[in-house]
Image (cartoon, rainbow, N blue to C red; front, side):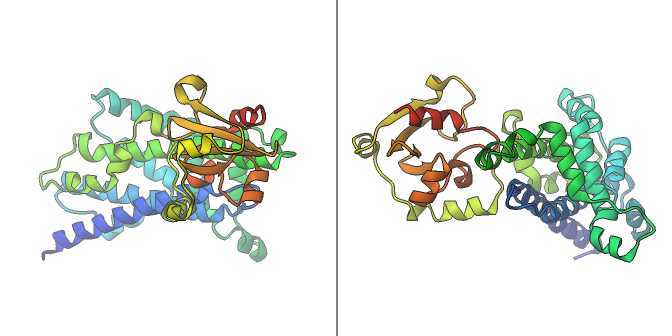
Amino acid sequence: MNADATKFLCLLEELETSRELIKAGFGSLQEIDMGNTFYHLPHQLMASGFERLMKCYISLVYEGQKGSYPDEKYMKRLGHDLKALLNKICAEFYGGKTRPLIQQEFDFITTDSTLQECIRILSLFGKQGRYYNLDIVAGSSQSPINPREEWESLEASIEDIKPFLDDAESLYLDYYPRIHSHLIAKMERLTRAIALQFTIGDHVDQNGRLRQASGIYTEFRSLRGEELGTIDYRRSVRILKQEEKKLIRRSEKEIVNGEWPTRIITKAEFGKEWPFRTDRVIVECRNNMLCIVHINGYAFSLNGLAQSHLGIPCPHDAGVAVLGKSVGPFIDMAFEL
């Protein structure tokens, strides 16, 4: 195998690593709530994933333009600043802007203030924030930044957390999922914009390497606008899905004819923002206090009492409801039974 082929295989492996880091970072961010404020992990994963993606993309387009991959000196000059890397891509490696979709994505990644703030914080994390506490201890001459405080300020700029502070359940089920959905949608769109460049960026690709590499990011490139911010990346959800067979499944007839009052609700009938990943659910209320929703025959808790008393997960934790979309109206309907 010649040197160029080896380099290309290494880039493919690095692209796969970047994709998994980004997805793991999104999942780790989705697990942040009032009981888990370990922002360091999602920051580390997302910063590393985006840096690798951008550098791999630059390397592939550079090879098409110059006929060889960038050398060590060039790669070192790229640095670790995500903001600078994105600016370089936009200035030197972003093609196909005669296509309306590509121009729209370009306008988004260069002007969206929330995305710019995400990139700024992740860049600062990579350059100055990874060892914030140790820098304080060592009396660093640089002014250290606290990435967690910066990120929480970003979250608060999207929606004020104060009205939720006295309601832990709303914080857990509504506020954090909604905020993280908003932020992840922005970063998913950035990932999609770069992924689209592999296929319709109109770059020189004589060896077909950009197109070969494009398959690694197919899932992001194929994201539709309405899907942005709705995917559940959490590892705990994947584990729960693997263990679904351990949950008890009942027929609709068994549920409706049980001893507790129920109501069938469809997406078309509901008419508002539908939170579930299926179009038909059954709500149930037990003992006037345990609110349950049945989805595809499985029972999920709608309130904390049902979760603690019955030991069943809530729809968001199970991945059967979209993070950031409230199940509150269904709790109200259950209590009305």
